[in-house]
View 1: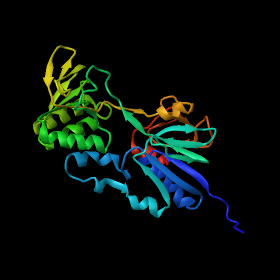
View 2: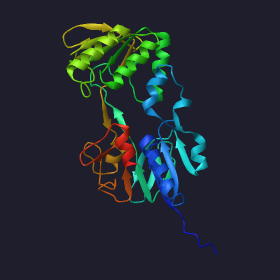
View 3: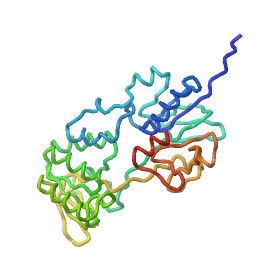
Amino acid sequence: MDMRVKKQKLVMVGNGMAGVRTIEELLKIAPDLYDITVFGAEPHPNYNRILLSPVLAGEQTLDEITLNPWDWYSDNHITLHAGKKVVEVDRVKRVVRAEDGTEVAYDRLLMCTGSNPFILPVPGKDLKGVIAYRDIADTNEMIATATQYKNAVVIGGGLLGLEAANGLMLRGMDVSVVHVQSTLMERQLDSVAGKLLQKSLEARGLKFLMGAQTQELTGNDEGRVKSIKFKDGTELATDLVVMAVGIRPNTQLAESMRLHCNKGIVVSDTLQTITDARIYSVGECAAHRGIAYGLVAPLFEQA
């Protein structure tokens, strides 16, 4: 007679940095506690999103920024459903369902749905060549665009926008950075430091439109972006528009499950959702004591 207790099932929605770090910590503490299944919307194992910029700049390859390769999942007996987006969770039956129909039951659920880039709600935002800078697919599209087209506009003069602009410039594009504020990286720098940064980037060949408010993006006959128009009536020709204007916690799935969300999936100090004690959340999607974090250090702390 088998006396072993049946393992509890842990399902993780999202295969990003904070979530996988949580599982690494769990495997250190209690390697045999759970049967673990992971769903990731992207067709990749866990990679370092922070290093997308060196990939864009041609300094690193996709393989080099992978944190947990395919083998890591199998070595730790983790079932990985890569490229499968979870679209529904039944909290009564405790079942997770993906877009392709894959269903997995859970005893504990870890919600790590991350964040979505904020897309400016302007006419033309759905044109071809208008993208956010968030994942490997975006990065690959930017690399491919640089081989075919000349002009790029990056909307957003924060850290991510400047990294995108720098990478596109290194790949041979003429890049203009559009920033609604008067100072670059205004969250990190005062106006003097912001001006110094701008001067040094201009010396490298980047152009800046400060205090510029985007009004609309216009397209050509093929439905590809051809110019960006500003509120003051000026217009700039472009073949690519990259939006790097911030992120919003991705709470769509959580809301459909009727989990309490307010600037993110609301969690307690034990990172349990306040709605359902069987469900935990970490990462950019979680709101802890009113704050949703977008930097990796506090998220690894959560993990």
